[in-house]
Length: 159
Image (cartoon, rainbow, N blue to C red; front, side, top):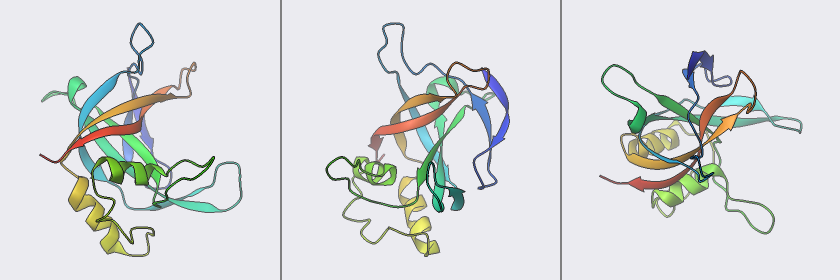
């Protein structure tokens, strides 16, 4: 299912909403393969269930199983542009998990803030054009406005 263009927060980026199955008929999560196409400029968004704002970025991934020369299916992955390792009841940040999956944790020391434009370029140079296997989730499930987003990147090939 394809819906209208939509805006990813305050980033100004437009995406077409796609609804893809996140699980197969047996309830097993479906893993898709794609190419990391681009990473947005940082944008601020209000924090969920608390005061203040957080800086976010959007990673756009082309879904290979659903795309061809005439039809491109891109899904967004929204994440806070901060790299933190979880402990106790707290989980890792999505950026931490992406860097870990790509084998870039050691190389990414200091990548914790959007203060430096160079940090974003570093991230783009290392991730864009790489092939990735990922899981999706459905946002607004059970409503006519439901759409798919990338929930977790489980593997990244470095060529």
